[in-house]
Image (cartoon, rainbow, N blue to C red; front, side):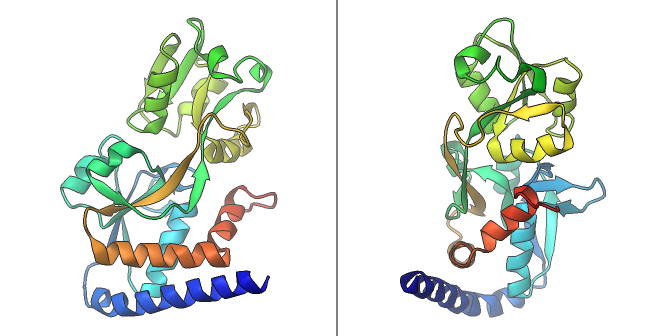
Length: 259
C-alpha cells in the first residue's frame, strides 16, 4: 500500500508539474479546445441531438479542460470522416471510445491507453445460445449488422465473410433493428454492450468479460503535437493512478451506475 501511495503521489505531482508548464501558454489561446467526437457511442460519447454531449470520454476531457482553465467546443464527426477532419485540422483532440487501431496512426497520434475493451456480440435474449462464437455467427443464414466506418465494420468484414452483412448508417438506431427482428447480431465493444442492454432489456451482451479480442482505448492527438501529447498523457496518467478513470467508468456501467 505504501508503494501504491507513493506511485499515486508521484503521478499526481508529475501531471501537475507538466500541466502547470503547459497551461499558461494554452490559457493565452482565445480559442476553445476543439474536441471531435461522434456522439453515437455510449457510454463513451452520446449526443443529445442539440449540440450537447455526455459520456465517459466527455466527462474526462471536461475534467482536463477545467484543470487547464479552458473551454471545450465539441466538433461533430463520424467514424468514416474522422481521418479527414484531422487532416483538415478541425480537431485539437478526438475522443469517444476510440480504439488504438493501427490504421488511425496514418492521421493521428495516440494518447496512452486509459482502458481496455474488446468485441463481443449483442443479440436478442432468446438467441443468446445461438451466436456466442465467431463460428456460429459466420454462417450464410445469420444477419449481421454493423455501423459504418469504424473498427466494428472492420471486424465484421474480417471475421464474418459468409454471413449476411448490413452496414447501418448510424450507431444509435442499430439496436432497434435487432429488437425488431431485422438483424440477428451486432458485434461491438463490450463496454458499449454492457451499457446498451440497460436500455434494451430484450437484448443480451454475450460474454463481455471474455471478448473476441482486446485493444486499448485512446484519445487521438494531432500528429507530432508534442505539447498536446504531454498535456493529455500527463493528465491521463494522473487519473489512472488516482482512480479518476475508474470512477467515471463506474458512473456509467458500474453496479450502481446513475449516468
